[in-house]
Image (cartoon, rainbow, N blue to C red):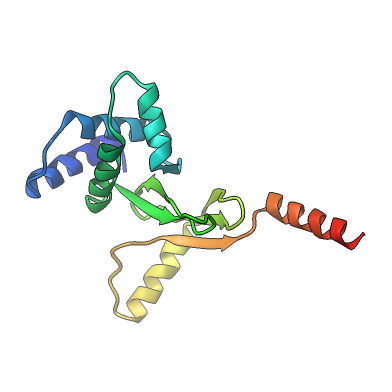
Length: 160
């Protein structure tokens, strides 16, 4: 979603849901969109980025605003199941862009992959089942190559 469209969408959402159109919300919005739209971020990373900036936004405001952005359909969240206390990762929603996520359960690294065929196959499956999708997230959990090597080396050391 490009920034201009997302901003219009957000303004419309805030007005229709009778929520404040505050400077802090748009500071957070601008900070998110200054990053690459493909970048995954966590709320605490956003808090840290905002603390380094010229404008101050409280941690509570960041968390409340991310919830509003998610409800408005501007960002989506993905839980990181590898952590003892899972945190959400967020990304800007792109319209049916045919990408998915490879999520390492060990280190939490998120690698995006792109495959236009995903949307095509999902649409076929939905038509076959007379199903209308409203959200698409492709996630594959496992071990990244770095963690696989670490595990293999650890097992080799234990055998000797």
